Image (tube, rainbow, N blue to C red; front, top):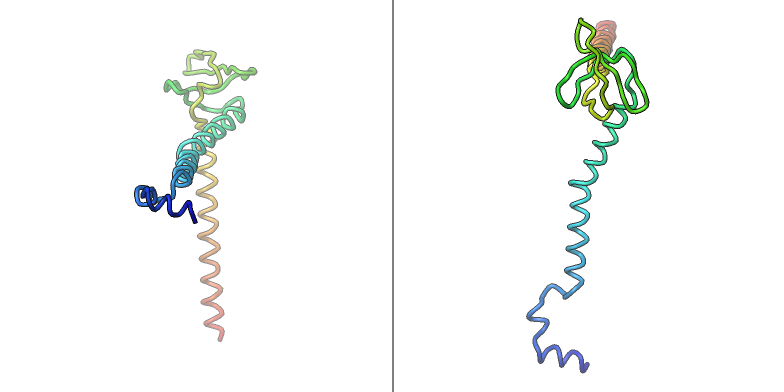
Length: 138
């Protein structure tokens, strides 16, 4: 009761309507959570995808490097790759981290997606035909 009288006399509640330090802690936690989900998490996901791409390289894959060099992989070592850049069999040794895209894998991925879309379309047409046949039979 005495503390209520002293706060009423000083007017601290009127000066800080948000509840003091607990409001600041909640805002700090909220800020850290937003920072994690908006910046750190997507960056880590992107790094994992790039690492998976670099570890899945095989001989014969056509790649593009960060610098824009395009070529076909001829040899793979621990952390290096050797690529051929033209018909003249110009070979370059590069670090694996310099690979940006695997063009062969992207073409296969696009091809599989197109095949899946085509199969779904055929299934839909067959279902429509079966429904029409069932309706005509009744």
